[in-house]
Image (tube, rainbow, N blue to C red):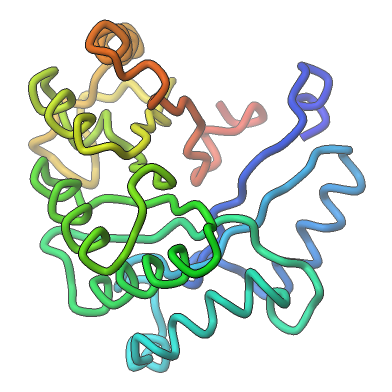
Length: 228
């Protein structure tokens, strides 16, 4: 974080939704922000089905909406630290009923509060479009929504262009990950950084330059400077 600050960085987004969020996460993020001088935007919402407890999986859509709403308007886990983004909203392939409720509850609270949403799509080229359909039908605003991890989901310029035309922000966040075997999808051909840049250039050429988000999906140790 201090290196990030020294390099000119000022703000990061922590996609610590339910299923990813650790105990006392809000207090940890506050302490980390104060120690590093970097602003941290905390996330809310729900990650994928596999990461959830039984009690969370049994929540109704209304219960889920209330948790997200409380995190944004009042604070996380009884603190006064409020979330500034709904995400990472986790989806699998095929999408589960819990994940559909998660998407719909995120859309409802976004419509109510105007809070941006960040979505983790399932590992299938049809996943992002299906997610958009469910999310939009529930009231979600695509102009305030980011679809993450697109370079491991949509592998052709045609698919990227078709999806970009729907109106969400298109996020590329796996820079530096150049592997011959992608453990989460053994049939996926993970692109190189040069191929990622080529995809970005294509989107710019097609008029979607203002809809590109470049980020880092830091969820394993080897993506940190110390271990990378």
